Image (cartoon, rainbow, N blue to C red; front, side):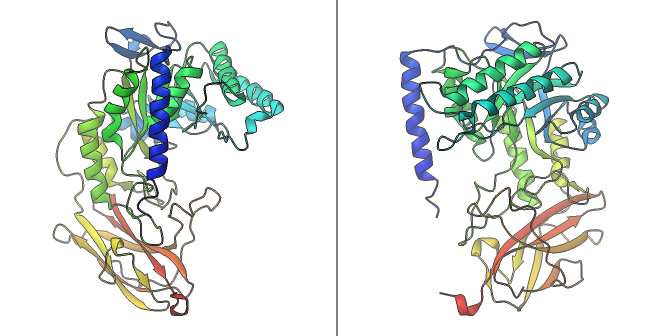
Amino acid sequence: MKYRFILPILYDLLLFMFFGLILMLFPWGGINGIYNSVGVVHIKSEGDALQLYRNGKPFYIKGASGDSYFGELSNMGANTIRVYDTLNLASVLDNADKNGLAVIVDIPLPEYDEKYSEYDDDTKNEARKTKIKSLVRTFKNYPALLIWNLGNEVRYPITLIPNKFIKTYNDLIDIIHDEDPNHLVGTTVQRRMDIMAISRHSSKLDIIGYNIFGTIGNLKSNIESLNSILEKPFPYYISEWGIDGYWETEQTTWGASIEPTSTKKIEQLRYRYNNFIRNAGDDCQGSLIFYWGQKHECTNTWFNAYGQLGEKSIMISMLEMLWANKEGNSSKIGLDYMLLDERGAQNSIVLNPNSLIKAELKLKETYDDSLKIRWELYHDHCSLESISDDIGNPKKVENLLTPEHGLSTMLKTPLKEGPYRIYAYLENKDGLVGTCNTPFYVLDSKNEQ
């Protein structure tokens, strides 16, 4: 299981080398849509660096990707929010403007699939162009608008000859530019290969957003390798960064991703911000932490700045300190790890049904009586093999945990075989919450083989 990522990585590396060779033999201009424009939002080339401008002043993106708590984000010193769709966009833009935030607006696009491409249907392509043209025309004059983001994590076709996706994508770039010359058109990607292919076929894009998590340490070398191949450096920003993603952590033997504790998360945030975000390079136009709000992504707590009840994660406290260039302990909780049946998640815990098992928390500091602790149990879908947008939020399992809310609880394992996850939430007197969870598998002894 631990080798399952090697083949895709080797494949991407070979493609990168091949495209790099083509680029060196036949140089392309790169991504430089409206350098030196005079739009409300534009990018200028200033000496050896690229600079984003907004309303006549240099603008450095500092904020989050998410969907809520705009006032809280602004009060922390942020200036930008990225939203992932256009639902209730008028309200979003007005709310952001009221709180002094610029908005990067995602325009969702169907994912490109070379086996079955929705972009082969000309009728759908024309309908999409009409809809996006109307959208841009409606909202282009809202003062909070910063960037139109055309597709999230676009898997751009790796081809030397433009196909229907590329032609449609370029038509959409032209439509947005024609309707709204005052704002940038960008997209977000995860792979260097996508940037290289975009520079070949869609060079009218103005800016690239880079979603990068556990591999953020490679960011600078990735950008330098691209700039050594492309004819011009390209403007970019870090559109999502944060803790290790669920696809990057250890897994149990049945494939459940093991989530870091909130203590480990704030350590990752501190290290990555100080070492990589601060030193991203002259062409980087800023960064956005992921995720500002609350959503279920693999688990209930993985990326979230806020909990299901609106409580603040201790990650917010760390981020606030980093943005203010302060040092210190943002936690004040001291959570270390969780044990279930005296074992950690890395032990791939398999339990019998209808058994009484102890779950306990270990703290790095002396237990503070003011801590409020609650425990919850859920069915678990957090494995790379089973994650799907169609699954929805996991179902909570009731009445199997003792009612105590201290450092330990007794769990009566479910009767139904399958994967589960036990969560602990620790709230301190400042209202900040630390979290941890442990996946486990209930296996009926009759099915051990």
